[in-house]
Amino acid sequence: MKIINYISMRPISIMAVILLLSSFSLAGRGSMKSKEKKAEKFYANGYYSLALPLYQDLLKLNPEELKYKMKVGVCLLQTRKRRESIPYLESASYGGLTEAYYYLGQAYHYANRLDEALNAYLMFKKLASVEAYLESDIDKMINTTLTAKEMMKNPVNVEIQNMGSKINSESSDYVPVISADESVLIFTSRREGTTGGLKDFDNEYFEDVYIAFKEGDDWTNAINIGPEINTPSHDASIGLSPDGQKLFIYRTNKDVYGGDIYESVLDGTMWSTPTKLPPEINSGNWEPSASLSSDGNYLYFASNRPGGYGGRDIYVSKRLPDGRWGIAQNLGAIINSKYDEDAPFIHPDGKTLYFSSKGHKNMGGFDIFKSELKDGLWTIPENIGYPINTVDDDIYFVLSAQGKRGYYSSNREGGLGGQDIYQINMEVEEVPLTLIKGYVVGTSKTPVKSVIHVIDNDTKELQGIYTSNASSGKYILILPPGKSYKIIVEAEGFHSLSQNFDVPEVNQYKEIIHDFELKPLSK
Image 1 (cartoon, rainbow, N blue to C red):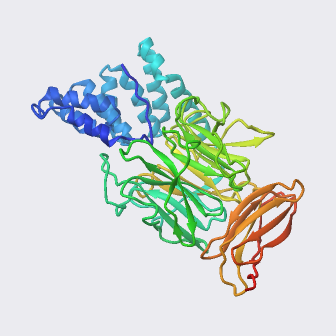
Image 2: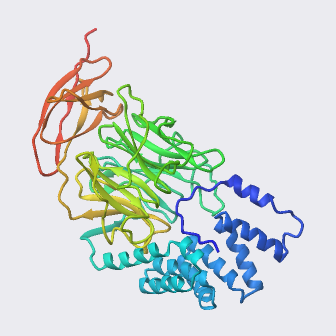
Image 3: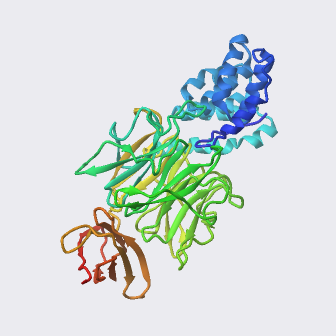
């Protein structure tokens, strides 16, 4: 018996599917034996959407066959049709198929029927062979169910709002990324109208990146970000620099299996052609998410490269003095578990890390966790609580610089379709952080593209390098409080401008509006 755990966001090789399909001869394709052989091959390789109709046909021909009932149930479970899977898995379990109890427990868990999930898990543990017990990780599943019951009794005080039809569609929408001042929202969607109009074997459109802007208290309708970013293949937003000037995307390889992290820079209103990050970041394995620190010096990302603690781990790379990225370092066993960790987000304060994990104290699927960097060490991850986290996948959490609003994607009931993007209004203390923003302009108030150096007056060290937008002149700086800084603004054709800023020690978020006016060089 082989126990299969639910895997989300699994990279799928279309070439592998083609090879599997071509491995079956045309002769006898409709026979029961060849259909079962084909179904087993798809099932064993994780192509559940392709195995499902074959097992459904086999079950019609053999309505009492328990293994077909279980396989249909598992395929439905793995393709996120969890509630539909329950009758098949119940029938297989009650008919005497021990293995089916394991999957029935998962189906009950995702349906929020936790007592029934616990009973199914305990029944599997009682009846399973030693080999199946060791392979199943059943004790972890039981603990997850108990954690879910505990956390649901003690909800955190938040308000969770679906972002509505201006952002979400009837298809899956996920991975929201925001600028520090919440003026820009970029996300990934599989909606109709995608670039190239292609669909994968799950009959879903390939991923495209979309963008929306905040006007007052409302968001504009999301639009396709454009051909500079989106191609006929998979393109997904995974990270945005706090000033909104650098976008990190995940782009699949030509065989649509695996992929790498790319970076695009906003030049005025146009995004540059994405460039692939160097081997220090991209390993040849799977790097599906990234987050850049506010000073631009640290890139946190997820990878399933060899040498980790299990599944996907979270790594960090530090920018070297010459601007190149240093060798990535695993964040260690405090953050990473033997299960998957993904979707890191380093808050603009530079010391608070949010990420999603299937390990730690988890209530089901991916949960969102928080850890803080103190004296060079990460604190033990803290589950940010129910109802933000649910019994299903909750992932891709980002937080405003102020700390009052979070955004993430979730597959909960009441959405518009598939995964939706939600806003979380959080009753927490404001982050002690100073955000300075404004415009860099010339004497005629025209926008100026500039480079902004921030130097710590006490240590004389460079705190960060920032840019202003070429079209609007807008800039955003994130500065830790309680320090004095020298801000140097430089632009081609203008005199450089240097100003000192004393950022007071505060216990709350502070926003400063300040414009820089540059004087042109005399002819």
